Length: 525
Image (tube, rainbow, N blue to C red):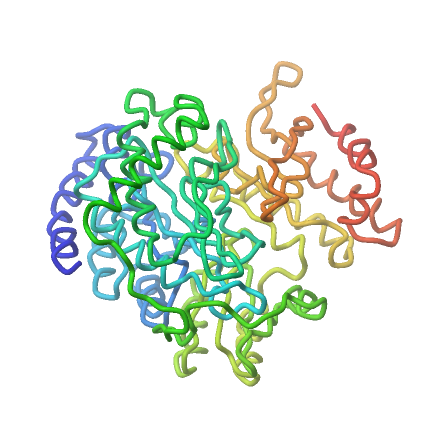
């Protein structure tokens, strides 16, 4: 890995050169995007600033990395930071000089931005409380970190048609969508993985295909190599619109794909030794253990605790605290406040979740109170933990300002002081790409436009009843399109209807879905 890191650092000279050319308008935005994405950076809409995606395998943000982020924010005057649904941290509104300097300095704390964008293996995702979650099947984090290292090693040697997303799930909660990603490892109670592949959200969404059952965790790298080799052999290099792995379900057929994948798996196992040497019960660097967890599942009390932000860990006497800044966009100064709070807390680290929630883990009782205090500015209820991508004000391909839409809705809804759960968490994407995971939300929206009286209006398509839980996976149904300006009124009316029944949204909708449709139809355009 040291040699790979050395080569990555040497490549930064090329990035600086191309970035300077882009800002000097010597290369086009399209040409620059094709190059810069592989370094984890893109030009923002308008081409006057850059973003940088800090790759954090498993969403792990230890104190050294947190200190670096806080120091970078202060040194470069960064005003906008976003937690992504791929468990990374994004800096926004960066100058050419700033993006280059932060990218280089990040190496010193183990943050590698290569492959953060472009046609490369992306950040490896993990259930955020893996290793500490009561009821989990086992700690999947060590295997995910090994996969991350493997994928970084092949970035410079393999040319794939498009990006590749690999993830691990530690329980049926399936927060990382392991059953419908490019490649997903799903933990099972006996300490093995089921393996799914060629799924994905966005345009032409597909559930994943199960390609293996009850594999030994020591073999995960063979399955990763087989996925990469299958994608290279059968992926679409001609049409970017049809180049994601999920399109192989159509080009090869379901059985044809499985056969092609298993052939590559056989070759992988006959090649270099990729077996992992981690064993059940081995203690990992973060103090958690590899292997089956304590028996049992979340109790109702623990679920209520999750809603109240304090989550008892499976380690007796330790807690996790959830913090969800509105829209996944904290005040930039918050990083320094958090670091100052936890810097002397032993074994404490942060985990970024796929829903833009941040978890502090391994806290004792006294530390829990301090973390609750420093994160009191976050979401006040389930509805305010809603998910939104960064939106069209920044994203080159975005159509609608998802962050702005969410802020408008929350501002209006707060006037009514609804009880927690009266409104569900919603998911908003600025376009069809589903960076806000709108397709698996209880209620979801993706951005578009609608012509009303010969005037083009910002609008969102409404998705209903999606789910990512293992065994209950489904993409939401598209019910219609609403104008952005009408969304706050829609949620107020919905909240009043649910509150009027003296209940919360989940049972209200389950009992009679047509009541939601009746309200929504008033706002369809």
